[in-house]
Image 1 (cartoon, rainbow, N blue to C red):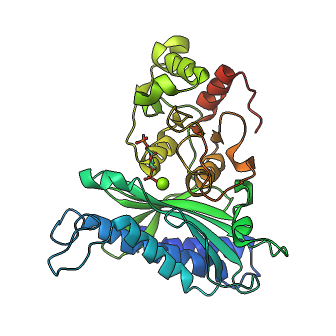
Image 2: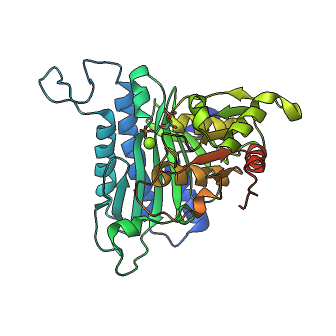
Image 3: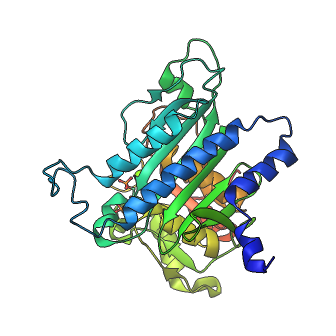
Length: 339
Ligand code: AHM
Ligand code: MG
C-alpha cells in the first residue's frame, strides 16, 4: 500500500473506534454512532455552504427562489440538518442549539437518551455574504439523571463536564477538530472519497505565538486592563513583535490560534458588557479544545470550564490562547491565573 493510500485509511470513524478500544473496551458503540451523526450533518452543511455563491440556487432568507418557494437562511438549514441527523440516533436525549430558544427533548428517559448535544449550527454566518470561512461548533454532555431538574437545568452543566467538544471549519478545506479529553485531533475532508482523514494528530498549541486577534474597533469600550494589554502587544516591549489577525468568524480565528499560538479575545465591550460570545455554544467547547491542546481559556477572572452556567444563552467574555500571552494578560488584570 502506498503512503497516500495508507493515509486515506486513517479515517475519523477508525480513529474513534481505536480510541474506544483503548479507553472504553466495554462500550457498545453508542458514542461513535452519535459522532457519526455530527459528521454526516456537517458534510451536508459544508456542501450547502460551498454552493452558496450560486445565487440562483440559494438566496437570502426570506427571498423567493426560482420555483417561487421561500428561501431559508443557511443557518436555519444547518440547524435543521443537525436536529435531524442527531434526533434519529436513538441515544440523544436533549438537543440545545444557539438557534433555538429552548432545548429540544428527543428522548425523555435518560436511560435511552443518554447524551445532550449543544451546538452552534453555523457560527459566523454573517460572513457568508462575502465568502469568508464559517464553522459548526458542538459540545456533548451526559444526562445527569437527577430527579426534579427541568430540561434547561439538565443542559446547564459546567464546561468541565463536557465529554467531547469540537468544530468543523468550512474553509479552503473542511476540517473537523475534536477532543474527548484525550488530546485534540484534526481531520481533513478528502472530497474525492467524502471522508474525514486524520491530518493533525495530537494538536498542540505553541507555548507562545506572534498573533493577537480581537475586534479592535471596540477598544474604547474595553476594560482598562484589556486596553493596557493591547498596548503591550503593540509596543514591541519584551522583544515582542505581534501581528494582528481578525477574521470575525470564531472557528477560523480560533483555528489559527490553535495552530500558531497567540491569543484570541472577545472582551466585555460597551455594547456587550458580558462579552458577545455564548458560554454553552462557543466558550465551553473552544475552552476544552484550548486546554486539551496545552493552552488556556478564561473570562478574565477564572477558567471558562469552571463557570457554573445560569442561563442557556448566557454570554461570556472569552480570552483564549497560548500560555505566555494568557499569563501576560492576567498580569495586566492583576488577577493570578488559577487554572
Ligand atoms: P454569530 O453567532 O451571530 O455568528 O456571532 C458570533 C461571531 C463569532 O464567530 C465571531 O467571533 C464574532 O461573532 C465576531 O463579532 P464582531 O463582529 O462583533 O467582532
Ligand atoms: Mg455563534
